[in-house]
Amino acid sequence: MLNYDEWIITNKNGTYSSSTVSFMNTRTYHGLFVKNMNNSFERYVLLSKLFEEILIDNNIYNLDTNQYNDIYIYPDGYKYLINYNKFPVPEFNYQINNIKIKKRIILDPYNDFLKIRYDFSGKIKNFKLTPLIAFRSFYNTVNNDNIKYNIKNGNNYLNINYNNTNLNIEYSGKFNGNPLWYYNFTYFIDKERGSGYKENLFSPGNIEFNNINSLEINIYSGVKNNIDFNTLLNRYLNLLSDINDKNIKKLVNISTYFLTGNNIIAGYYWFGAWARDTMISLPGNVLIPKKFGLAKKILENYINLGIPMKTNFNSNDVSEDVSLWFIYAMKKYYDYTEDINFIKNNINYMKKLINYYLNENDLHKIYNGFIILKKGHLTWMDGKYNDVVFTPRNGGAIEINALWYNALMTMKYFYDKLNLNFDSVYGNTINLLKNNFKNYYLKDGRFMDTIYPDDTSFRPNFIFAFSLPFNILDNFNDYKNDVDNELLTKYGLRTLSIMDKNFKPVYIGDQYSRDSAYHNGTVWPWLVGPYITASVRSGYNKNKLYDYFKNLFSMEYVPEIFDGLNPDKPKGCIIQSWSYAELIRSYYEDIKNNINIK
Image (cartoon, helix red, strand yellow):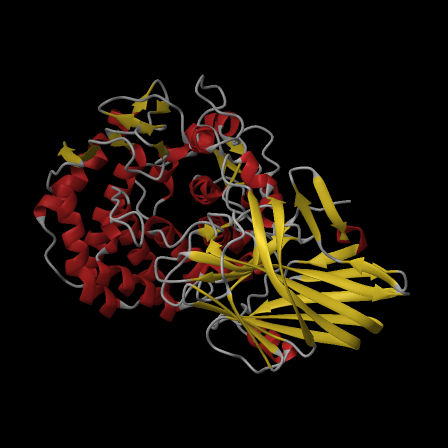
């Protein structure tokens, strides 16, 4: 049966290798070698795939599978796949007649160097690999056959150059030059998404191997690596966490896929480094695994670039919660490291961020201490298509003001630690927020999503008022039943009540359709974190919380989102940083101490 399950392996540069387990590429984002080109995390599919042709008992078999012209599946290599593992490295086991074949793929953690190893249970007379190259952005497709790639064939290596980008393939066989274009590869997921989905791919020829029991292929762009597969595998495995807790170990280890040299990639495939996602992800993906040096480097990186005011690491777009999440991350950093010198050195930067909110500008104003947004797409619910804002949250968005209170209280905490005089304006604002928060937001026993204007849409954003380090509200249990009845699923929380007339049950279709559902009912796993924290603080049973979300905690690949109804099929990014981070954080901070799991 054709299996569309996806696999991925990444390195610290943001380069990755990914496809389905049948090696039928179903997205433009799939490719055996997808190189990150720069600090903006632009990634290019250099090597799309390898055709694999094997001679067994005088018959030719193919391990590869592709879809052409929307309907044709050829060849049928998927029939020979008997099992696979996606972690710790992608491994695929095939059987053809009495021959077993093991294929493993690994990326050098630090260099853009990919190694593929094949092991055969018997001697193989003839095996051919045909590389298919693209050299294009992972957003696009190649739709012509007049591209001139510069091909050089040396001693057991191919060098392919296009637009000053190099791809090298090293092998121990014989290269047979035979330039060909292969037409009409179909990527059906992109077809569903309403984007370009057909592609032509170029092959310079094939690489032939004779009388072998095993072979290794080296694919790289940049630094050459001379180590063998097992040595490289050990280098990779040594980077994995030594956390022994079986309930969370795999989540912690796969969360390393998002970590780069001084940043956190928000999700694979299409995200780069987003400031909000980075700050939310820092506790679970960096601090809990005790990568304190990396955490400090990430925070310093954002401070030096002045990024916390922006949504995207390499964008001029702004968002009104990013600086607040940055202060949250600084508090978490101190909680785990007690590095008071780092706080002291950066207290003025945090004060600058606080003062930004106290001064009115074209994005917000302050009213009775509350931040009132002047535009509707400045929070994490920022779905927008051209001029259409799908979740307009102008006014006093509830989690913005919960974060605002948390940021002010964090500053008070740091000022006390440093024996500094706390500004009376900050103290007065804290009092205004604390005294008026519930009166402003609570209406008929439920929390509104925004005030000024009042929006009674029932969304999960109010939970942050109970879950942040300095929570402005207590007794989440008083409001938990409505959450459980209208927002809660085993895979996360809906972004809008299932009872709301604007609820979107399915995340599907072109970009407009998907964006309209993105925060209007779609389930987000990362919201499990604040839900667990708020529930535990209110005395809810930790074991029951873990048991309820056990399927989510046991997933290898935790995605960005699920459908609002029947949320059992992953949607959006196949792995999302804050999905892992908030599961890990809430497990360790809220569940772990008293949980009894066999």
